[in-house]
Image (cartoon, rainbow, N blue to C red; front, top):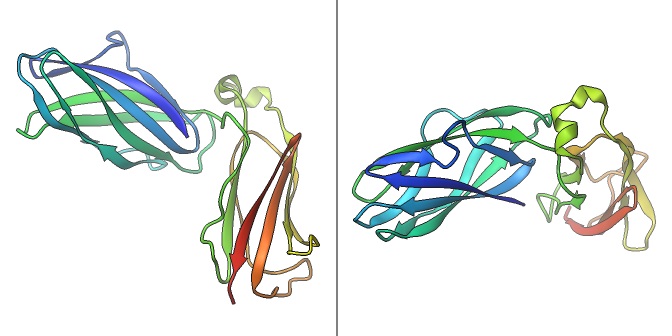
Amino acid sequence: MRRICLGVTLILGLALSVQASSLPVLELEPGTNQISILVVNQRKTALDSVDVAVNSDLPGWLKITGTTPVDVPAGAEQKLSLNLQVGEVTPGTSGELPLVLKNRTGHSWQVKALVKVVPPSRYELLPNFPNPFNPATTIAFSIPGTSRQAAQPSAGQATVRCRLLIYNLLGQKVKTLVSETKAPGRYKVQWDGTDEGGHRVASGVYFYRLIAGDFIKTRKMLLLQ
């Protein structure tokens, strides 16, 4: 999960970004990103239950999945957290994040930022979903890259050879889901509970393993027929 802090100062009912000359840029990775909005209250009265909502339509690949309201005493500051989910989108994609902060008394302050999608910063093999499953489950994994690659995708991205394999409890390979080179990004693959010959396998515990460069990780899943 990527964690970013965005500074906002509340003065006499106005919301001003600390970067006054331009919109602040939030670099978000595919998946869940936790954003902390630093609310600095320079008013003489406290701000109760400050929360955040969307001010207008978000890009289709971006959504808010949770917020945590905060109380901000006069002359103090607090961090207001929200989670942003970035869907399947090409690194380098950007869009505007229009937010509105509101407190319990109904006062509101508009806040804007520019969101830029960057490649994942590390290898990841995520828990499959659903788990247990029947008849199919989805496996997601991430291949890391750099912000520079996201800014210049046509210049060529570093690729890595990836293999995603399914094994049974005996350590026998059941199926190869992925065996190819991948550019930086987040990927999803579905396993339908069949072996290499397309036959349904028996109920039980199975393992899925990602081998990408020097990265190797294995997770467990349960198939229920």
